[in-house]
Every structure is written in structure tokens, then in C-alpha cells.
Amino acid sequence: METVKKNYKSVENLWNNFLKDNPNNKIKEIPISFYFCDNKKDADECAELVFKGIKQATATSLWWFEKHNEPLPKVNDQYIVTDWNGNAKAVIETIKIEQVPYNKITADFAAMEGEGDKSLDHWKKVHEAYYKREMEPHGDKFDENMLIVCEYFKTIYKVEK
Image 1 (tube, rainbow, N blue to C red):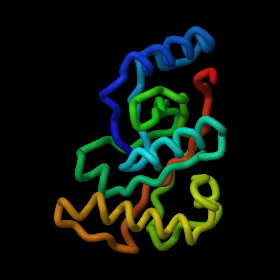
Image 2 (image 1 turned 180 degrees about the vertical axis):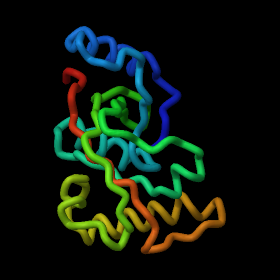
Image 3 (image 1 turned 135 degrees about the horizontal axis):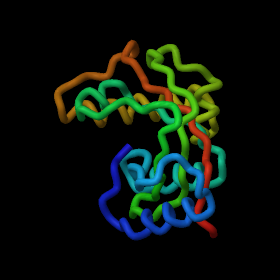
């Protein structure tokens, strides 16, 4: 998850349209906007999966939250998902959070993430590689027992195509 700094106008427009269509939304201030993954191809694919309602979960390492001194997500949090270039695609809302050791992630969770062939094997392969890439520059090592913050969400608004 990377916070988006560029193309803020797109995020602002999507949020304003969302509030216009949902005037009773409890959150009024523009929430955090971000893209998934650490490269353009995967970020754009994940944004499209969220847009289509296929991707309904994400798996950030607890290590990442601690290393970046970021608060853990909470149920009812809202975020704006963008593509790699910061183009706002959808508003999501967190519906459930679990901390699960990497080696205890289930096939059901992998399917909810909606990436690749949605299998646990695919999930493990791409996520282990991702966690290693994010930890290595800090001198930290991937561990199969490390906690993963499994965040389930629903897409509550999306940009018109």
C-alpha cells in the first residue's frame, strides 16, 4: 500500500462525487488514497479488480505498519483506491480485520484478495516475494510466522467509466 501524492485532483473529484451521492456518509474529510503493490502493472491490475468488485481484501504485513509507524486499519475506515498514476478508481470501506500468521492464511482469504488465479499457491508466491522486497532494504527478513493484517473491504463507490 502506497499513499498517493500525485493527481490529487482525481481523488478530490471522486470523493466530492461520492459525498454528493451519499450525503449521509459519516466521514466527510477526504480519506487516505493509495494504490496496491509496488509496481505499475500490479497496481493498475489491483485497482481494476477493486473497480470490478473482485478484489475484496488486502494483506499488509504487521511489520509494515510498525516500521512506518502507521495506525492499524479499523472497521468502517474508508479509503480511495487509485491506479499507479494516482487516478482515483473507487472508494472502499473496511468491513473486517484479522491478524493472521503468513503460514495460516487460508484459501478463502486468497480468493477474497482476487489476484491471479485466486489460489492460495499464487497468493503465497506473490506475497512472499512482495514482503521480501519491502523488508530487505531495512535489513529485515521475511518469516513464515510473521503476522499479516488481513483487511476485508467492500467497494462502496467507483468512478464512472
